[in-house]
Every structure is written in C-alpha cells, then in structure tokens.
Image (tube, rainbow, N blue to C red):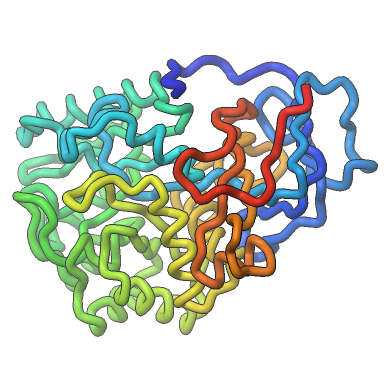
Length: 397
C-alpha cells in the first residue's frame, strides 16, 4: 500500500505497448486506433501504432498483453475526512482499496463526516481550507483527491466565497447538508461561488445524514448548481416526475451514484438519452456512507448502466471518465496528448460469458483490473478486489 506525499511528476519516458484496445473516455470517439501510448514526464506524449510513434530510449516499458487501456476512473462524489481513514465506518485504507477498483481521481462532496464538524462560518472555512491543503499534499494510494468542499450555512456573505477561493478552495460541498435548504438562498450563494471559480453541487432527494433534509426539484432548479448531486437519491430518490423536471430544466451534470436508488438511476439515464444529452451523465459512489465503502462502486455503476440501461460499455465507461473530466474541469479522465498519464488496464474477468471485455460489461459482469498507473507511475499490479482478469499487463524492464 502506497500512501505518498505529493512530489514532482516523474521524469523520463514510459512506453505502453501491445495494447488490445485504447478507450479514450470521450463519447464522441470512445475507441482509438492505437496499440501504443508514450508517456513523457508523467503526461501523455503520443498515442498510435507502435511503428508510428517514438518508443526509443524508454526508461520503462509496460507490455499490456492485449488488455484494454482506459483512463483512470473518476469518483465524482466521495466524503473524505483525514488521510485514508473514514469515521463513518471506522475503516482504514478505503481510498487505496478504491484505487484497486480502477479509481484514480476522487472529488469531495463535503467533508461531512469529520467528527465535530464546525458549522460556524469561520470554522467551516477553516475545515475546507485544511482539507484542501492536506489532500493536495497527501495522496493515499496515489489517488488524486480534490477535497476542501465547505458545507454552506446561513449567514455567509460574498466575501466568504472570495476568501475560500483566494485560499485555493474550488468546490462547494452538497448544498442541503447544512442550514441552507431553500432555493433562493442557495442560488445567491452558488452565484457568488461561481463568480470566484468555485464549482457547486446539491443534495437531491431525501435526507441521508442528521442535518440533511428533503431537497426537491424546485430547490435544485432554483439553486442552479453545476452538478445535480446523486439525482438517483442518496439513498432515497425523488419521484420520477421530479427527476424528469430536473433533467429537462437545467444543463447541470446529472450525477448517478452507487449509494442511490438503482431504478431511479436507470430512469435518469433514460431521460438523458431521450434528450440526446448523455454527455451530462457522471458517476459517483457517495461513499463512505451508512451502507459502507464500495471499492468497486464505480465499476459496478458502469456495469449496471451498460447492462440494464442498454448502453454500449465503451460509452458507459465515458460516464466515469471523460464526462466527469469535462463537467468537473479536470485534467485527468481522458486519454489524449498532454493529459496526465492516469490509466487503468482492464480485461474480461475469468470465466465471464462475454465475448470480450466490453461484451462482459454489457452482460453485467465486472472487468478485471490488471494494473493502475497514475502520473506515469505504476501504483498497483493485479487488483486485489476485482475478479481476476484473463490478461495481465507486465513491466518489461
């Protein structure tokens, strides 16, 4: 297990060859014509056929063994607290374990499980700044955690949002988990946050933790957040009519989470598809939560939405990568020249009925994770959590 302080990007050249399939993470072109990816100093330098790219003088070579290379998965909705410990389940190592489920980036929806979480304005700002600083400087398992997401409270003024932005805070926690629960106040504070470059999300559905409450379509639309947090409820979903109202009434990201209502997840996906706006669909776990920690939660959502939502697996994987990257303004999440070299190597799980890895996902199986690379650094070999993959990549030198 690697719990490393953040250091400068690695220097040198990594070549990944003999790739069976390269998934871009971009819905408009999900499968790339390539069998080789070249990484220089932790960023993607070339994507193409082995004969056409510069593979000379590599410091490290990975043979993908015909497995699939995909962008590292992104969990759009987590609740971190301190390092790799969660008081919600009194569990150590949950972030590293999730990395073994293919996740290389996490986005905090608020550090709400912090014992004694302050709700006064000075305290909530201090907590957010501390979380932003600590998770910028420390990455459990190498995972990139965008944290420091304050829960807004009544009485905050525009200057508070400027203070947060000046300190490096770029996210708001779920609106509705604090004392701001009405659309008018939320909308005013979201506008202040947006003015200073802070992205916002909102709790949707019934209450999940003490202090939260029902947030319906009227409040969600009035707030005008950038992301509709767990549109399928966390855990309790809104009625179908309100879910449709939200989907049709805004252009925000439609976040579907593991710790939500699965029928409502499929309903929200169906509405997005009917509208021709599946690029708005992004995925999270909403963990740790009362239902526990789900190391394979993002892969499970990809499989659920592909198999029961009748979405090609390569598109469902975009929900957990490129869609989230674009909606959340992240560098990671796409296999594209210039992007960080964050990859998950996937293959069909042993004895799956699928013809290949993509078909196995569409049949409802989870793929096997054979290796994780973050910023061009191998962070794990075969996953200790997924079913064993039929094909495993290996380091050649």
